Image (tube, rainbow, N blue to C red; front, side, top):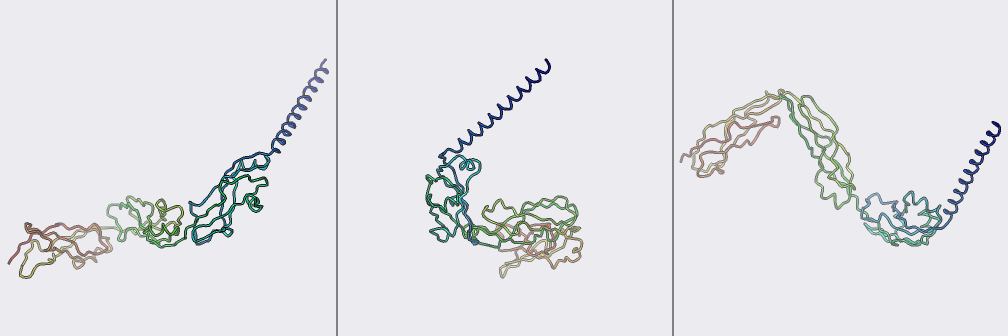
Length: 319
């Protein structure tokens, strides 16, 4: 009795394996037959242009895709359902060309065209038989770099020169019609707080305001800041009168004013009253006013946060 059960179990397992084998075989045979049949399908073909002159740039206004109706067996069309086919067009083969346009005639019966498309079936129709490549003249231009910054120094610290970038200009290249409109480029924002030591770091050029068809060389600059101890200084500066008419004597009160500033400790002793000119322009005074507005005309480059302790002085006209 146990022997018969084992025999029946073996026969059942053998029958299942045979059934699965024939099921797989017939399925593969059916697939082969189906893929061997001819089908007609419309596909979108990407266009790739090669041998573009180095002094020119591809324009997005060029034809970049074209639709075609293809006829072939399932095996030939299967790849086109998985990946987008690519048609390569050599710029040197354009039948019409000028400075900025190249025309390509597409002959669907051409063997060269089919080989380029890498399709062995039939091309029944093409959306259009002429494709146009548009190019821009590639122009190079050197322009200055402007830094976008927000620098907060620690109390008692500062910098004589502030942020220095190197190089201070870059070369941009791109379509000539757009290059002429760009006067400068900007860096990404440099934000520092509580700065009390020298600082050096690369700073990328902000490319968001530059067209994608343009390139910037170099794409980054180096930002450096020399930080030093700062202190407050002041000088008494005599007021200079300007544009006083002949025959008129003008008396001013006070005759000198204080100029307050911040300066590095290493340059503190080098600052003197001779480095400043504070002027009052008599030609700008109104008839009803008895005050002259002061203007700081000259100051040393090494000082910062300069302010006049008074902005106006009184005057009296003696005839």
